[in-house]
Amino acid sequence: MAFPTQRLRRTRATPALRELVRETKLDRGDLILPLFVRPGRGEKRPIRSMPGQFQLSVDELVKLAREARKAGIPGVILFGIPDKKDARASGAWAKNGIVQRAIRALKDKTPELAVLADLCFCEYTDHGHCGIIRKAKGGFVLDNDATLELAAKTALSQAEAGADVIAPSGMADGQVGAIREALDKGGFSHTPILAYAAKYASAFYGPFREAAESPPKFGDRSTYQMDPANAREALREVALDVEEGADMVMVKPALPYLDVVRAVRERFSLPVAAYNVSGEYAMVKAAAQKGWIDERRVVLEALTSIKRAGADFILTYHAMDAARWLEQG
Ligand code: PBG
Image (cartoon, rainbow, N blue to C red; front, side, top):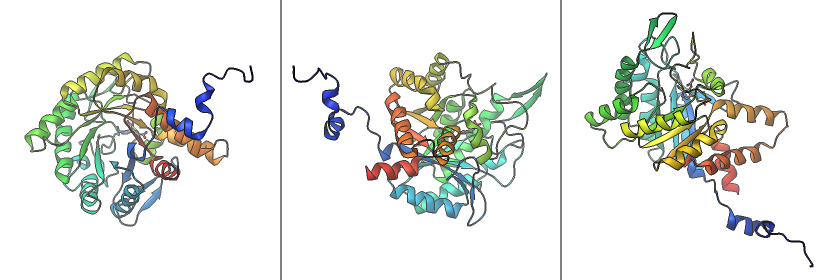
């Protein structure tokens, strides 16, 4: 025999053959860029724990959104840092709130870019929790029904401003149903909901809380976000959100939860998103800055893995870099 048997290696021999048999192809159109918007003009404040990411005023946000669209990214998701925070999260649902203003500006200046509005209250409450808080024995509880009322109000204000997608991330039970009902009644039955369906109480959100100035002042989010140890429960979360009217569902974080992405993909037929969160981003950036990893290869491998696990699209702070790298091929 002239050659040893090379059964699986036959189709790996050249770049062209590898391309032919490639099962998962990452595309710029799979990426959503998360952006932080704050009051002011000409503001571009670096976020210390997320190198390359900024808190942007609306004018700067519009500039970056234009670049994102040019780079082939189909959409952005917005997080607001309001002027003032209070117990009722009024900055979240104010007609002229920071996110509402940003949505209007984006739909005016870059109408072809999809604008997803994250809907949560932790950035807007003075205590940093994702809803209305009541004192209870031994601590506090998140008042589910009071929070749903605010969610409905906020969704409507975001849709009125022109949001293409409402993305509730608060993990109050019934939030998708409450938002769907409010949108339908308000004349927005055409506006889709991307539900953060399986959102874990994760330490990987650390840098985001610095970026959004939203760490809880007391306690943690473990009475409303999911226990990282649970996968079957994620399927119940998704099933309920689908029943309540979600059009797309999300798993968050992404890389430590690829098994959950896969399980959701196998059981449901609607689009599945995964959120490659701030801590996942920060780890890659830190190691790359030290010269310990090849950033480009690591990022593209990670994003490809998230797709391979079953995600249709990915929310990622690497979106701009990844889009450029993918264009270069
Ligand atoms: C709001 C929200 C959080 C993230 C997205 N929406 C933070 C949290 O739940 O504490 C985290 C995103 C990231 O880490 O990149 N509830």
